Image 1 (cartoon, helix red, strand yellow):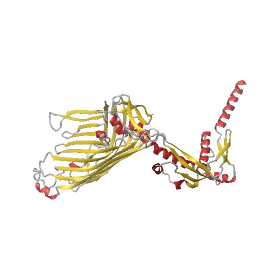
Image 2 (tube, helix red, strand yellow):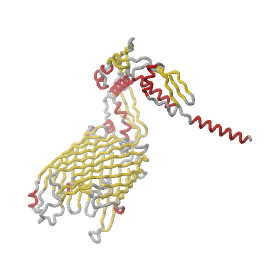
Image 3 (cartoon, rainbow, N blue to C red):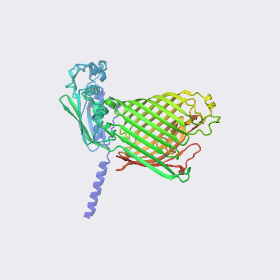
Image 4 (cartoon, rainbow, N blue to C red):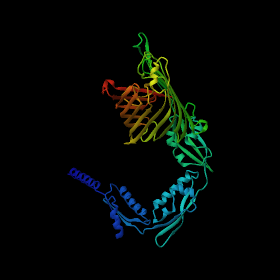
Length: 582
């Protein structure tokens, strides 16, 4: 009998708890007068909040609404609460108007930069939010122009019988502060001049809070340092001293694959293939880049590229950028490209660049061209281009972003000269202009849209445009492969115009690690002396990148389809590699 009673008590207790926990909470706001009741009906506040915290938030929203309308004495009193109800009595009081908020002692330049105009703060309902926004704008301007301790308040406040308020702004700038030394605590040997230029913090400059507030995110963009702890700013008299806590981080990379196989084109000989990449980042602690890449993927073809970048040359916002590219296409031609540019750097590595590019393309074999009756697909060409480039990024983390965007744009114009080759039928040159103008435009941009807590959607585009009356195949863009159009052989498509759209979902499971599912869709035209064609190839697949102690391991699987090449699993492209850091 006792056990039955005990079970009954437990069941009754559970029913009581469930009924209480399942009760709907109600919120009632009782107006103190009839005029307030009419306004309350139009507010449409949430009368069934999910919790007491949300009920309090709704009460605050209602009060905020009345404050914005000039009811600066509004209040909610006599709050009653029980298990299912929260009730409050709303007193609105009278509407107060701004007779005028005068400029007071605030300098004109500060007022103009803060959005102040006297007519905006005269003869209208007194809105405390607008006043707060104005004072915040004034303080922000002062903090970014050498006065981090400035304060502002309303002075000479007068309240008149007609419920209007007048006041004056009163600004106390306190002492002016300038930037002093930068101290690095940690084992990083990063040069102080690089740090000052990268953060745009020159000794003697006026203190600028906006620059200091971006230091942490800017440090994350530097692959050769790791942040030990957040930075400190120490104020001593009228000086601001920055203390960075950073260690040196392995960032230089080496990735190499060499292959040896029988040479089908030369009996008894071996064919050496390979792909070797060496990237040195800030080896001299100046933020410089030295990048080398050699590839030999076919028997008689080779590809060599070299990139050197040195930012903040001679302690200025200018940087130098040099690129060399050597491409040998079997026994057909050899192309050498030199590109040198001067960058104007701002906000870190964002830059505008002017450049000069010289390209020499030479035929290696002219067999059979002495008696040719049509122009060959390749020619001896010299091109001199002058161009302008833009590189801008605003990413939350440059090397594995979840949100933000980047844009790389390059436009160039110059002269193109077709050189007579003595081993080619000279009559062929009579049908084309040997000197002409060449136009080139290249675009690369991506937008990262955060979807969930650790995922993002990449929406990107890579495009190129060449314009000239007589283009040869050794002048065209080469697309396809891991960096452009996945699912195809590296640089297997030549194009005079192309546009590749990318849609890619990434799940970010670590700082430098992610899983990806992607789709690349392209349109291209091949418009050259060798003929005209256009196509819409596409590729899709999945991949994974993850960081290990040895470096970054990458693996991707992609399928591609184009005209005359349907989707086939046996033609899938698998890319994998381990990039070692040192």
